[in-house]
Length: 133
Image (cartoon, rainbow, N blue to C red):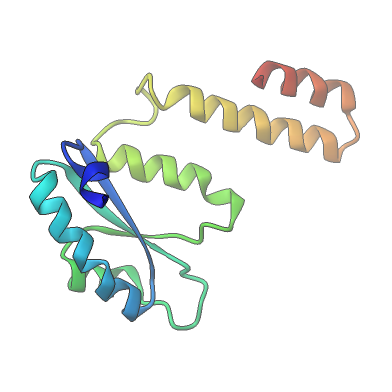
């Protein structure tokens, strides 16, 4: 089943829990990537970096042999970080890519709208949320 998701991909981002046990289990997916998408740009996201048993990205890189980025996915502020990681893997500039620009603009508008709500500026918030939709 997994090979159908990976086959022919231009990029593969492997997301793993940063514990040693899960990093070791992730080796299975590295073999699938090599078989099904040998030319794909690949990297690893070491998630759950906030847990005490989390391996740091350098340790994960040594085990898996791929560039590894740290992440705490439950933190909503990491959305921009994830977009930048994807841009890095695809060797794209987030500032000029027509694919990433709408995402970045939407995130900026959302952030402004949330700030407006916190200041009880409901007209501005409504305007911004309308613009997002």
